[in-house]
Length: 494
Image 1 (cartoon, rainbow, N blue to C red):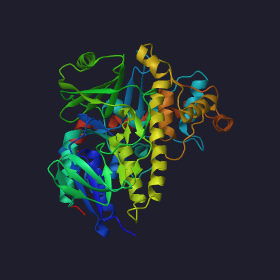
Image 2 (image 1 turned 45 degrees about the horizontal axis):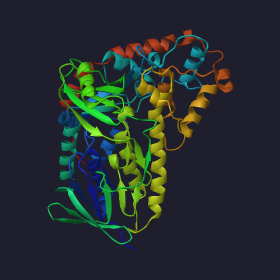
Image 3 (image 1 turned 180 degrees about the vertical axis):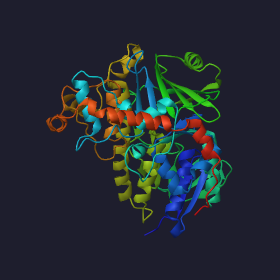
Image 4 (image 1 turned 90 degrees about the horizontal axis):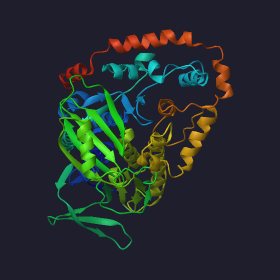
């Protein structure tokens, strides 16, 4: 048995450095040697990214302190995402990071809202969400992590400048003793069986390893193509002036051939345009970006890609992470989250024998399920609710949706039940935010839920809504909270 003592990570984006820090921290007791071949930030790099709350857990594991992270990267907080115009002009809905109301006995609160909507009465998730109300008001405060009730009913994520984040993680890795080698890979030395022995850099240096992690697209593999459902294949970015009081909220806005986004940072506003080149050319896409972000600078097309995933993420002794594993528009903000899932699963299945294949089989099964679930959640934004009239939007609805998504939507449409399976990143409440937000109301509610809620009236919920409004209004302005955190003293590192 030949153990894995040397891990070589190829790439220079945030995924590569998160992988390096995580593996080094997880196996520091056995002296695992981790090296990063820094090839730069990659082909599909945006000016900024929006994340899911899971990044907070990753930061805690690798020793990132939130005040320092905010200070070094210009990051702001994120309580949710607002989607504008996806179901036609004038439509908008918010997907917040948190609960909707509080459970009514054994019934999730959103079931009460569905009952009200089925009966023709207006009731929205935003009215009963502390995260949503605070986001609308441009206010923020951390949840009480160990508390109960509304003050612990939500969580949060981040908006972060990508270049600053990569620089910060690289320095954090250097302090942790992770070796960095700059340069591009010229060739790969493999055995006859396909196992990588070393990488030859353009400089002529050879980097040997036992396990290789590809965050750059170095290795090739068969892919599942998702472009029939998700045809956007271009990304343009620009930087705008900062907002006076940036909300803790990502905004996406549907356009004629894709969608635009706005990410409020502490010292700037990052904007972008995801679009389909079959319906709009690059010049027109850049003009569209300029029209929605007056005063934007450095506008350029930064990525050309095709939505899809590798069929095998782990082959021989090479594991693909990040864009090398999955290309998916960041509508749900899940690109870093998927990489974190890959890192965590690699830690769990880390091979005792460098030539073992059984771990890779299980890794590929688990990560395929994770990827396909993220695909379905993303597609649902295009397919659920009323359709926009443009040709691009007709094209997104031309192909039958994946069987897994069709089953979920059919079940919900029949009786309001949301089926969440293993290895889904988005929970039942996330699907409730999405499906209710786009205006999809089931024809009926499960008999069990109808029975549980039959004596509950809308008037009984008025105190809850009032309390949520009061708590949201009591929070400080978002940017003031960020500035306070940035000035907080550093804790001693463990």
